[in-house]
Amino acid sequence: MTDTEIEITADLVRDLLQEQHPDLAGLAIREVPGGWGNQMWRLGDELAVRMQRMDPTPELQLKERRWLPVLAPHLPLPVPTPVRFGEPSVRFPKHWTVMTWVAGEPLDHGAITRGAHAADTLAGFLRALHVEAPAEAPTATDRGAHPRNCTDGFENFLQAVALDDIAADVRAVWDDAVAAHAWEGPPVWVHGDLHPANVVVSDGTLSGIVDFGDLFAGDPAWDLAAAWVLLPAGMAARFFDAYEHADEAAIQRARGLAAVKSLFLMLMGQNGDRGLPGGKPNWGPVGRAALDRVLKGV
Image (cartoon, rainbow, N blue to C red; front, side):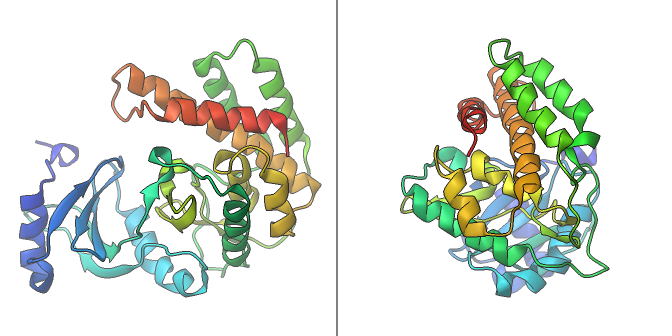
């Protein structure tokens, strides 16, 4: 059995806690559905265990361990904060982390019904996050570039999803993003992966942000794409008014990146319908709704 084939069970999680953090081993353990690179287990009422699963290296978990305690006190929404570290062992040769639990329902299984409140909440969160990052902050690896450097990915997603009826409209949005001026400010903190499975909602609005494994310093447009990917129709303009710091070029880049993210969600939905590993059947309709919002603009 290879590392990626290790079966992660409640018994394994409890054994690891007993070995490294025995004071937590008596808490109830419940699996949290979803996840790919990492698997989450609820630990009691206030904690969770994040287990490295498909991620080939511990880089993403180690990044969260290093930077979330720095960022969390300055953010207006709850985020998972590491409280204990689990190190590789004979029993489980990968990293795992005990983190605070962020209450709420993932947006890909929930809904935002208070759109204006959610738009203002998201804008406030990103204003707080998008501050100049220190020189030692992580840089982007597979994301973070100007759209002009991501054209291959866009083309691959567009062809895979096969939206013949609106392909020209989607391409026009992308071309607009490619033509936009690059980010000229200092690198700021960027979550990097804001999609419906990485935010939680309660009472009809955003209530927390999770999964900071792709955190990097760079262009905030990668997060501003959430105006279309996360918020209900008609809320993008309100979001940008509340955010205040996005010029026309940033909005152009963000809209193009939102198109890519929407296509990715649709592709993952198709993969789920086909029973392929990592596919998410419920992401298809979510991605199509997001793409429709992108095409309508702000």
